[in-house]
Image (cartoon, rainbow, N blue to C red; front, side, top):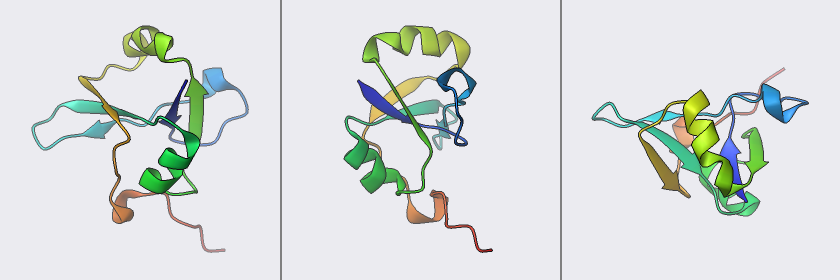
Length: 86
């Protein structure tokens, strides 16, 4: 199983939109996380996520094109989902 950061929280997995990151050279990266605690420590606790079997990466790539898969990628603090002020 792998944990993928998503754009927003959704009720149904099929409605999820995975979050891609662009490298300086223009390549698109799909960050994946080996465990939920790794996603929380690398992306922040407010990051929406989806869990799926690693065997589904091929299917996901046909839906959301990406160049690379990066395991346990640390997301800079300023790019993480922030607390919403009310």
